Length: 96
Image (cartoon, rainbow, N blue to C red):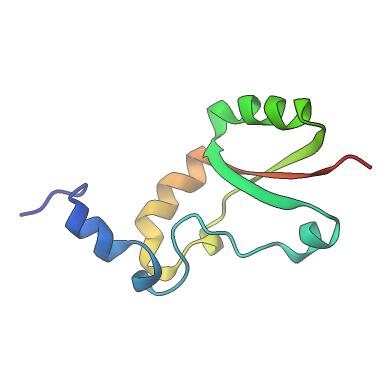
């Protein structure tokens, strides 16, 4: 029986074929976008400070947002349970 990390199993459980968007693909927050924020990437919360420092050194304002179950397709519930506990989204915008 394939293990939980088996690539064939994961390819069936994740991505567009799982019933929606790819894992960790956030449906853009229109309020953030209207305020000039752009989603950059998802990172482990423990390492977010590195990304924040880098973007700030490049002259950007930075904000982070926690992932929520609504950010995942219905077929990605198992991944969402883990990612929502340990991942954050990094957003940036040009300094005003």
